[in-house]
Image 1 (tube, rainbow, N blue to C red):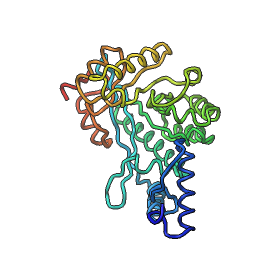
Image 2 (image 1 turned 180 degrees about the vertical axis):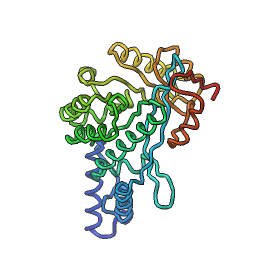
Image 3 (image 1 turned 90 degrees about the vertical axis):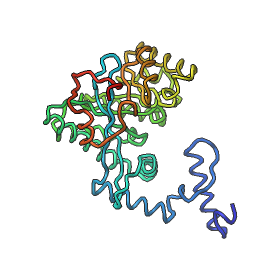
Image 4 (image 1 turned 30 degrees about the horizontal axis):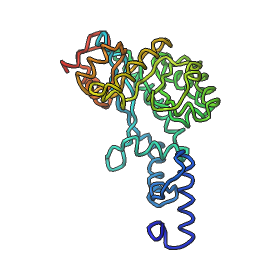
Length: 307
């Protein structure tokens, strides 16, 4: 749009080209140009340079959110969530830099940094007598990386980690982008011994015929359904049906986005296996997570009401 997106034909055509590629990637069929979409804008190039340096310097930090069994109240694992600590000390949330990493190819070294940090943390916890399974998110681009399984095996050996200490979470949308290639990578990752989980279930467009071919052990119900299920019968029905489907397929079910007692109680009544969300704890650095754990251990019952 002239003059907001350019005052000459060259700028307008280049910015229209940026919007066209965004529209193709999104699948919506249209997009309106903004500077944030432009991989060659000065602001975006500066942010990209900062992110590349942050990965090289290992300025990425992991926060951990507990996953608690609904029937026993026991801690069964944690999810590792990446944050970027910029030079000024400000923590950047993943939704502000993960898309940039995916679009520019930086997701590959970023994922390897996250996996290495997570496995290093499991090693440190083992030294302290704490055995925990850590879940790490993989992006769509990671499922198209044929070298990732070999890199993962190397990291497992490096940190003397057994594969069952790691759970890799992959999204439906990630699986359905080039599904043949994604399935091949998923099978190779599972062959290392690590477990796989389907993240954000219910928000994608995958078929059950495809899902049943995947070597997954866990299914995570998206927080958009869990967060309102206690007051929305439609969402409660979706959660109930998903739990039944997953159990019929032999999968464990995790509900993410649990933020209150009513949701916790309802999930227990519906037979959900594991809960995760702010009702239990927000994601915290490893040192604060240990403080949250306090005298508890994975073998001791943990009740949200006593937190």
